[in-house]
Length: 486
Image (cartoon, rainbow, N blue to C red; front, side, top):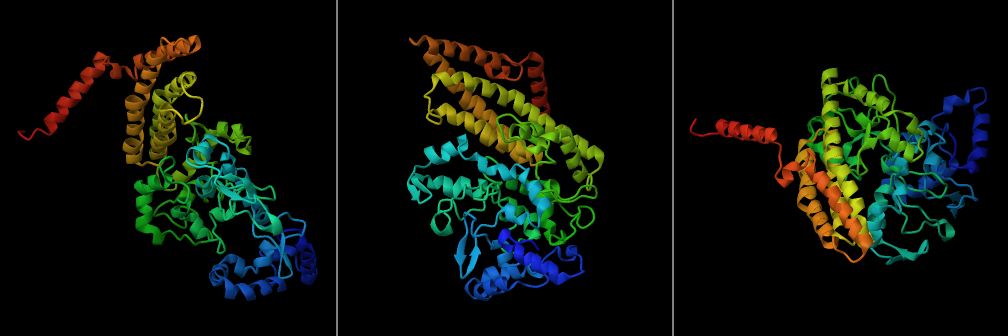
């Protein structure tokens, strides 16, 4: 068993000698017995940290004789190392440490969007948390200039903090505790394995349960947990959770369980044709995070990720393979036609014109982001309502697609965003500042063009006659169906 850092190399050499003619791969899952250093740790922690000790005792690490020092042992030169009862240790166990035994999993994870979650630091979302919601009132040794407690307790806990080491190998309280999925660690690695595999049991069953994903994937802007619970998949899961063999070592959909899928089933876990992957994007064909949905290979290219080489078509085939464990090909193909149509509707009817109009409006607004009502209207249109609609369609949750999604998108666009644009253009049409007057004219021209388009003509009372006749027939048919006199 490889140790956490180079300080354990001597013990490894001793283990190899002790094995003699036995191939080293025979001990790939751990030392032949607990090391003396770990035994000393256990003797203390079973009294002082009994819950931690019991969690480790229920883990596969326990059965493999992988204990405290094997994970927490540190070289004295490590930036986060400190001496603890004669042992050089570190509190953080990073993906780089885990990779000594789980190299394939860490390599896959490092290539994923999960591992890059900490890169949100400094983004528009963080402007909200750090400036609009917060201030620099939380001062720590690692952040003497202050940091926003709203970001520390909110954004960073899902996306990950940049962990700072202070005197004596201690971790700065603004950046630790933190199990954010994209945590930026002192050793240069990105991510936190315990975001999904909670310490110290590191349970696969827990990581496979949808509630684990729900730590981060819920709420007004990315409600995947709620979407899943509304879907037929979620309904089946909660009705059959005891039949899913979540703790099974081999967990192949259609072989080891078939009553329902979880988040892990679709995005990570093995099928009869695919192995487990820790890159959660390799089965996703749309990235629904930005203002306009884009193909996932394009999104990976923007972040310089290796996944850019995997086409969205290949990713879709990967996901279809999962679907086919329970559904026939017609069902799968028809679902994707429905999903793609919703994405196209959102992109073309609302997202693209809204983005264009907002860009034209910016010269007429106060420069600071979120200091104008229009900033909030546009942000919530795509970041909240638009994401809900797209995620709802992706995971087959009709209420989130419609009432929490496209209904809210259209209400925001027509009842809030467009009226604000009209007022802004009118207010600056005769502005003494010629640049602003020109910007107002450009905004009005584009707005008129949008509202005159086929998608939006109804708003200005110019619904095409054939569509008006179709709506009239539909209304008459509805009344006839529900006429109590019939």
